[in-house]
Length: 69
Image (cartoon, rainbow, N blue to C red; front, side):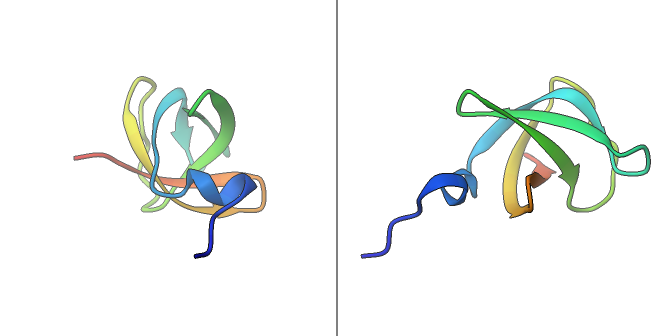
């Protein structure tokens, strides 16, 4: 059985936006499992602070996230 280590364990997790995510301005932060990450929206929408998001993937040191319906 393959087990994710390090960053891979965050994929599929729910996090909280701690700084508005705005891809055009290049800003955004998410807290996932107690760790703060720089984040970008998968679909390019602006995601306000306080929104719950799901981690879709990781690109370098940035999480790619989408809002949780």
